[in-house]
Image 1: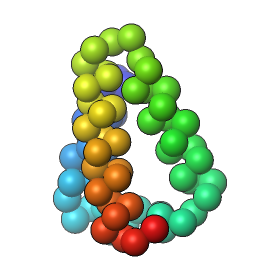
Image 2: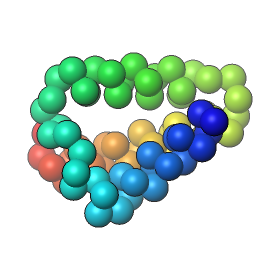
Image 3: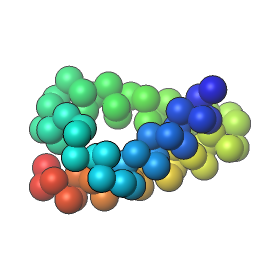
Image 4: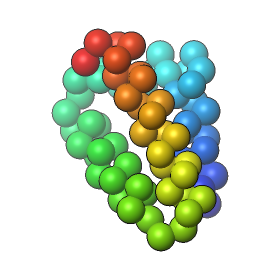
Length: 68
């Protein structure tokens, strides 16, 4: 389930759906997202780790696009 959620989030950030996300400066959302990303990057399952890395890449691109 975690793997599917990570892949879904990665795809959502790579499309026009990312326009409906909270503002990049929303500190509470940003902190929660950072915690989840770090936890999944450190996950023992290789597939979860790879999906998390893809999501982190897309989050970074999204932050650059919205100008945080």
